[in-house]
Image (cartoon, rainbow, N blue to C red; front, side, top):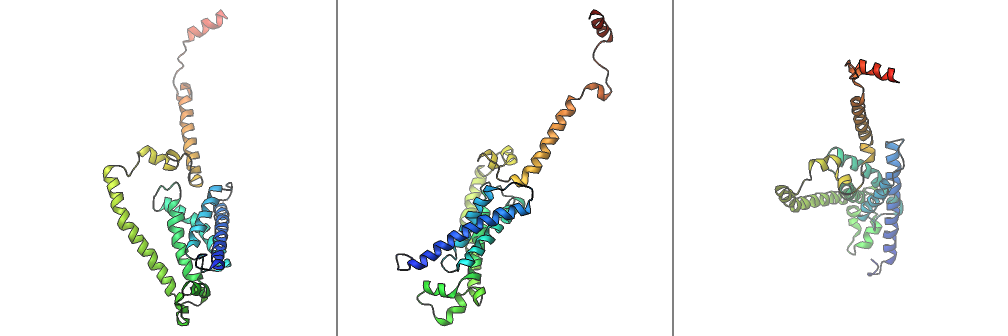
Length: 249
């Protein structure tokens, strides 16, 4: 945009990008704390919220107003937390870096938000062939648009999903056939975040499960350490030997 003489327009896109990333961080941080009260502030949620805001605003950064960028980032931060839970709980995908919720789900959200928040004045500056009768076509729904832009964004999502599936499915099938697609069962149980990346990516999900498992193991060890007398068995100490030891003392 700078090279074609639209420096001011480019500046607005930069500002929108920064604002969206900021509210994305705040949205994910506060929403996670609200959903799981009593937990410490999770810096990883805030950092991924920054990425969620950046991804979501990419589609519409040059065609939305600053207030809309704030809203889009906030929604992206919240949506990222929900998508992260959906990925691990419903899709059963072990994604320790949360790449799926950040890039796929928040990218889809950003495309849809453009269909709602695109301002016709900004769209006109990007399209020299923009005609007055085209305003409803290229405007977001919140600016009196006909919904055609929103429909186009949804079609774009479907096309991208089909394209990725077409090219990636054979690759994954090949990895699966060669035995390279899955890690060992032990690593699956512990999670790739811990076994491959050296940290827990889902502390809020597994914290209670790990504590319960640890307590169960401790209880089992305690049961093994209980003296045999508790089970109704006789002492292995010879009474005569015990009396002899006491007399000697």
